[in-house]
Length: 304
Ligand SMILES: Cc1cc2nc3c(=O)[nH]c(=O)nc-3n(C[C@H](O)[C@H](O)[C@H](O)COP(=O)(O)OP(=O)(O)OC[C@H]3O[C@@H](n4cnc5c(N)ncnc54)[C@H](O)[C@@H]3O)c2cc1C
Image 1 (cartoon, helix red, strand yellow):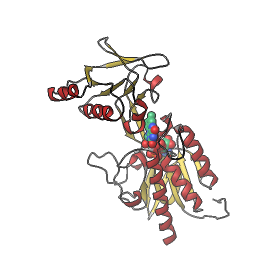
Image 2 (cartoon, protein in one colour):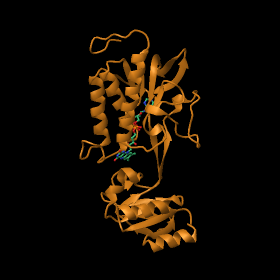
Image 3 (cartoon, protein in one colour):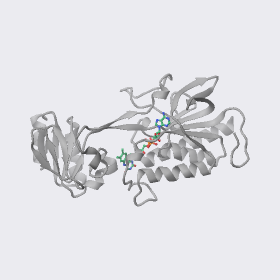
Image 4 (cartoon, protein in one colour):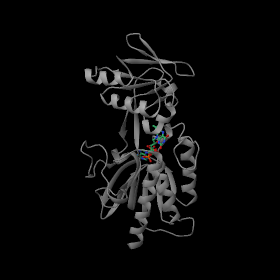
C-alpha cells in the first residue's frame, strides 16, 4: 500500500479503524497526519447519522450529523487514510497482531480502534419517523435544550421517568407531563410529581398526531394528550458482533466495554471509542476519545 507522502508500508497496517462516526473519524484524522498506514472501514448508519441539529459541538452553531460525518470522511481521506465501505465481520488476535475480516478480505494490523457505535431502538409509535429528532427526542443531553419553554411529555416505561420529568422541569420547561407507559407509579412518586406541578398520565401511547408540527399523542384508549415536544424512551444496541470471539471486559450488565487510559480495552492494542464504551455518549466526547486513542497509538508505534 502506498501512502500520500511517499511512505510505503509493507506487511501489517499500523491501524484499522472500525466505524466512521465522530470517534473513528477523529482518530483517522490524527493517525493520517502521523503518516501511518490506516484503513477505516464503515457501513452506512450510526447514531450521528440520525442527529438533525447538533448545537453543542465546538466550532459549529448548528450542524447536522450527516454533514459533520461527510466533512470528517473527506478530512481523513485527505490525510491518506484509506476509507473503505465494508462491514467488519470479525476481529481476532494472531501472533501479536489483529486480523480484521472485512468485505470478504483479511487485513493484519498492529492496532485496532473499535468505533462502531450503536443503533437506536425506536418505540413502535405510529408516525414516529415523521417527528424523530425534530420534536420527538430520546436523549436529554443531546436535545433537552430544544424543549425549552415548550409543552413537553416525558414518556418512560420505568420509574426513571419521574427523575427525568423533574430534571426537565428544573432545566427546560414548566409545562411537563409524565406519561407512565404501561405502569402505575407508586403513590409517593405520584405525590412528588403533583407537588412539583408535573402532570401524570398512565396509559399506552399509540400514535403521534400532527402533519408537519407535533400536536399531541393518542393513547390506546383513545385519549389525546396535547404537546409540542416529547422526550420518549429509546434504547441502543451495540454494533459489536465482530468482537464476539474476544474475551473483552464489560460493565456489570455485560453491555458496554470497559476501557482504561486512552481507551484501551482489556485486550492490549484494541482501543474502543464512542458509544461502545462506558461513559456518556456525545459526538464531541467520541471525537475527543478518538484523538486520545490515536495519540496513544502513535506513541506506541514510535516506541516499537
Ligand atoms: C437523534 C440523535 C440526536 C443526537 N444529537 C446529538 C447532539 O445534538 N449532540 C451530540 O453530541 N450527540 C448527539 N447524538 C449522539 C451522538 O450521535 C453519538 O453519541 C456519538 O456521535 C456516537 O459516535 P460514535 O463515534 O460512537 O459512532 P456513530 O456515530 O454511532 O457511528 C458508528 C459508525 O460505525 C459504523 N459501523 C457499525 N458497525 C460496523 C461494522 N461492523 N463495520 C464497519 N462499520 C460499522 C456505522 O455504520 C457508523 O459509521 C445524537 C444521537 C441521536 C440518535
